[in-house]
Image (tube, rainbow, N blue to C red; front, side, top):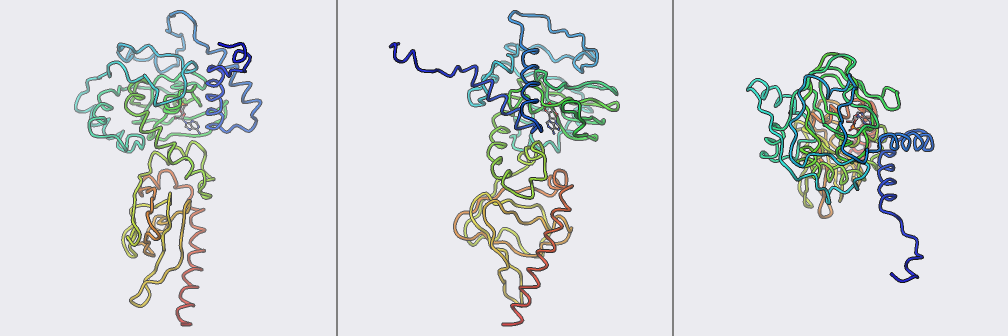
Length: 372
Ligand code: CMP
């Protein structure tokens, strides 16, 4: 190396990684004070620094779920987990997909309970049949009791959990921020983003969880889930109505979306049909039209970042208008009714405000037509 280049300031890889991980954690949690958060984050990072030599990890944390039932996942080849802090956050360069996938034999009864529990897991949506079978094989059952800590904020991510039953409370910096009621999933963030646990999850009641180890999760789900969240991040961050959602809820919304494409002139929604979901416009424009005396009259045009199809979901009535793709290729993100109700349920009030706007548009349209 020339003396010239040795004088250049090099940004150490480790520094880049640490700052990247910190930024992701900060963006996920969106704490009120960046300095307080940073101080806490880096203190925890230091406290959790991995020991340099192999050590016994049998922590005496009696409340940790991993110490219960003696039902530890089998040790797999190549399964020794690297510290999340030492790894770069790059799913493409991820090498966690080496090694064998764990298989936990299940009775028919267990398997059908598991199938029922994972039915609504949005993260599993884009899996192929074969991958889904691997997921079912790899999941193992955990019983929990009131007060058990399943996840502690700041810890290294070990498992991902799907809830079969039980109530679970989520805390960030000891503040209660979320409750799971007999359904849902948690523990995916640390595994997806290779960062410390973003929150603490504690059981309120007896419950049953289905767990999946980190490696299986990353091998099967990482790339698809990560890509999807990344792909929809910008779109969802720019939909004003969704500003009311927590960052974390917007991520869950991304899991649920399905991309649909239409060419100019194609009908996306037909007036009078039963509603099956709503759409966010990723690219292109659409024309909203209503039937008027054997003809269709355009009542509005919508473009990127806007949405449609939510009215029938909120009012539980048939589609009030038809929607057509206009001006070239239109790419939409579709959210089905069930996911809509689960994730957006509490936004219905915001959406209902739109009804007033729609009513004004319909009245205006009727007035224009009678004046013709
Ligand atoms: P993870 O960070 O792996 O562990 C804690 C889990 O709590 C986290 O993944 C999420 O699955 C879950 N969680 C629920 N609500 C939130 C929230 N608002 N912010 C972050 N994590 C949350």
